[in-house]
Image 1 (cartoon, rainbow, N blue to C red):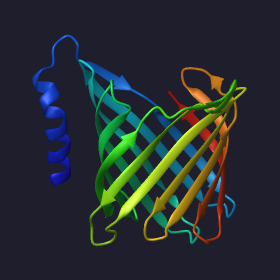
Image 2: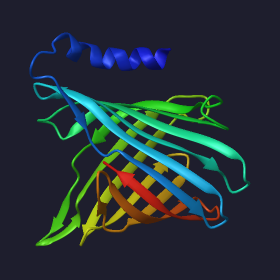
Image 3: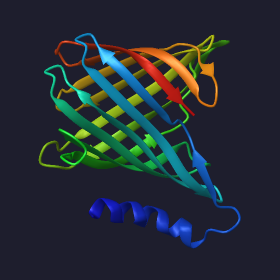
Image 4: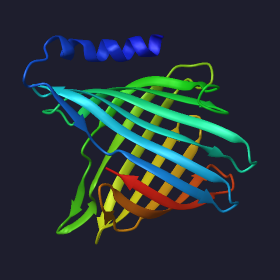
Length: 217
């Protein structure tokens, strides 16, 4: 209930003044189906939607994953980020919440926190493009399971329609996570289809490797 009230409170001021200039926006939205090296399955959904009004914006970015883990147990993981920003500033105020469980109905909050997202990250060296796009979050968590700082950096590099997409997460308690995804050029239809390979590296645990198919708008 508090989570829903927070979202409504973030969007309510914009809705009150909504006139002809209110616009609904959609960013990167995609579905993925993959299989790990141990033949367990994984399914992901990325969502990025929002509204904008006279330079101000309120957006929701989500990553939700379900499947079977390396011990063949079902799981559900979700990370939702609510953002408020203005187009003249390269940063948004954010609230992030993570949940985990055996399935969607069983999911419980892992942690949540407020912070800042740096948007539109790009890097060029001379004529060479190093980072095509990206973002970085700095979040202050305050929960029984984790009370500290977390940094998340996600960037993208395109090369002849191939995409390299690394994501790094670091917490001040020593936890580290790296996700590295390589996507093939798209097959364009009513949606864009890509094949991909994905590596997941968490602290000193055994890495997970996946191959799969992505459909994106």
